[in-house]
Image 1: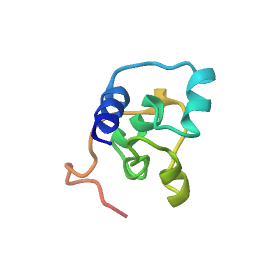
Image 2: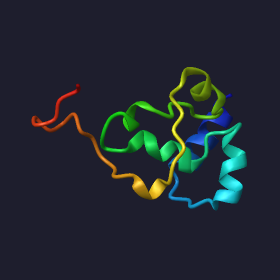
Image 3: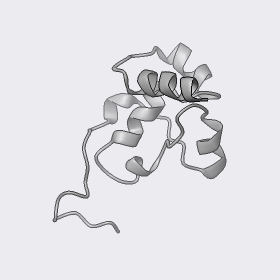
Length: 87
């Protein structure tokens, strides 16, 4: 388990661009870099999505999976600014 977790952590956090024809089928089972990137978006609700580190079916089961174009992502945090509310 630890080896798989380390492997997937490196892969999902790597700056890898996967073509959609490969990413889409893999994402039905595994967390891919394109899926995990949404977890690092600066604004909610996307920061509260895609929690899995190996398998994507957990996020599918709990309704936290987001699959979209990774070019829409703006990295950062919205909770560090005093002007944003959690509502």
